[in-house]
Amino acid sequence: DSPYIMLCDQDDIWNRDKVELTLEKMKLMERENPEKPVLVFTDAMNFDSSAGKKLGRFHEMSHLNAKKVDTAHLFMENKCIGCTVMINRFVKEYLEQTPEEIRVHDWWLALICAHFGKIVYVPMCTLRYRQHGNNMIGGQSFGSYIRSRLQGIARQKNVIRETVTQGQCFEKVFGDRMTEEQRKTAKAFAGLYETNGFVRRIRLCRYGFWKSGFVRNAGLMFLI
Image (cartoon, helix red, strand yellow):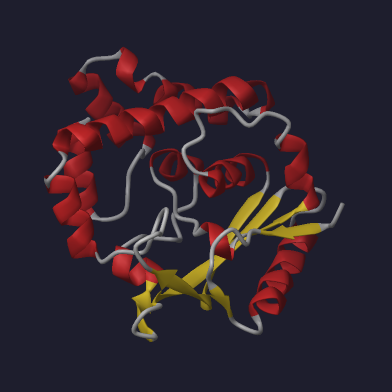
């Protein structure tokens, strides 16, 4: 029933001004986008909970470009850290269906707001993001990211397929609410594996279904 919702599904340590900073940006975006779904997300400080020390900013360590939150980029790669997210009440009308194909909850919320409202990044760390053995999705260095990808080629191909399946589901649920241009982009993404490898790669370039950085995109072109 609240006008705003923040996600707190981890064991992280919130900064004292986390709510205030996020809410301030949210209200500004709402004035510019009245009665539309809005999502605000921030950076986080990776934090070694056993050693009690800061490891570095999440987006910097992950080499994620948090500014690229257009629909094409978001279909291929999530930028949001769920534990930093705030959404407004207008998002809730888009949550009547929560399909099993959703890969990550914050990713789905970002896709909704990118299509039908506004998504905005605040480049400030608003919490300490605990890193330990029980993380569902943790912050990792870019080097660790690369090593894990190289060690599991088949798994990474499957991850891309799951990402496309999520896109197919999003287009199925919301296609009739999209603009003509949005629907065209969504259908192009949803149909990636209905074409051959050459056409898939052409679509990546044509529509901008990219990840962050040269290394990730080189891997994407190879794996897809």
